[in-house]
Structures are given as structure tokens and as C-alpha cells.
Length: 220
Length: 75
Image (cartoon, helix red, strand yellow):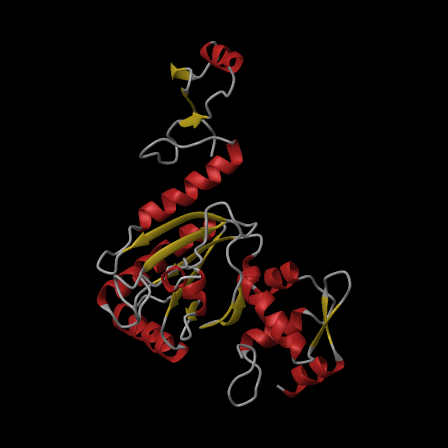
């Protein structure tokens, strides 16, 4: 095999609708396996480094939405390439300076094992730190959404909640959600896949724009 | 080890988990009884099982071993 081919071998990355890569990791709450979250939704997210400004604002924001995530059956698990002692010191510092207690565990991924599995290091951004990744993993351990932010951009917590709401609504009602959807808005009925289905769709009681674009209200 | 302090004593959460397993219990029942999240219970059960303080039954329930009972008394 030519050398350049070896050098260009792709780093394994999680893919949507495929099982999330399994791991066992040291965290601020002890040794945790991905499978420990079986049956619950999980947001696995990475941040570049402890004791940095954008990350600190994000952790405070994650702690603020934590009760809303819990109501939705969602757990949070952070990660960076820092030691568990650094994580503990940073959590204590955040609490001391802002009064905010961080209720979720953080992976101390010093050997980059989990970061590599999930493609969290983007050398164009930094060779030694993880970028701001989010992996939303469903109760069956399947990756349902992924977002990657650059190091300079703090994440939008309302968008994270919106994604959870959209995925859970889609699962419950077998529907899709339109642009800028938020809970309470009408949802999209999947387009028919046959000519017969298209004809019947036009006679349905949905809010019809055309046979392929129909909306309806759903509860919860 | 999340269940054992660096001085060798059990953590408060480990004592709670062991206490909840005096009668055989499922991880979900132990989570409900202790108020700890299920992921922490699963992690703790693994650690306490490896330490010989809990045993796993075929029906998925965990129960205290003799060593586990003695350890609770000591701590």
C-alpha cells in the first residue's frame, strides 16, 4: 500500500443512526462505561480545557439546563484531555466563584482514548485539545445527532434542548420537524412513497401545502 | 475508586448502595432507594462486586456478601 494511502486512512468517526462507540473511562464520578447509560438519553460533550473562559461559561450553562434535561430523561457527560484532579479543582473553583454546582461527571481523557473514538480532536483547531463536540445518544446506545463547534464559539443550550425535544417527539409520533421547529409547533407528516399514497394524502385532513409537504399538530 | 476513599473507608454513596442491597435488589430499585442516578449505581455495583462486597444473582439482582455485611458494620 502506498505511504500516502496509509497516512490518509480516515479516523473512525461515529455515524448517525449507528451504535455509539463503547468506552470505559475515568470520570469525576468514578469509572463509567457508556453502557451504564443504557435506557437513558445521553449527551456526551467535549470542551477544550479546564480553567478556560468559554468552557467555564458553558459549564455554568449546562448546569443551568441540567434540571430540564433530567425532566426529559437525559444525562450529561463531559470530557476533556485534562486530569481528574484538574476537573475536580475547576468544578470547585466554579462553585466557589459563581455558586454553581456542576452535577454531572466529566471524563478525564488524558490518553485521548474516548476523544479518538469520537473524533473530538480537530488538528486544524488544536492538536492537544478537544473541540466543542456534542453527541446525542439515545436509550438504545445509537448516535442520533452530532454537532461540532470551534473552540472560540460557546454552545447554545436552547438549541441542545430543542434537538432533544425534536428527537423525542419524532420517536413518539413517527414524524419529522420543520425548520426552526419548537415544541407546540406543527410537525411534518413523512411524505408518501407511492402515487396512491400521494393521491390519498391530498384528501387527508392534514394542513397540506402539496402532496409531499403536510403538517399536523401532535400532543407532547 | 469511587466507592472507596483514599484512606480505605467506604464513600457515603457506596455505603448507601450496600445498604440498599441488604435484600436482593435490581440496579433500578437501588437507584430509586438511594436517590442516585442509575449510571452511578451501575458503576458502583461493578466496583463493589469486583471488591467482593456484593454478588450478582442470575435474576439480575445484587445482594450483600458476608464480606459486604462485615464491611458495613466496620465503616
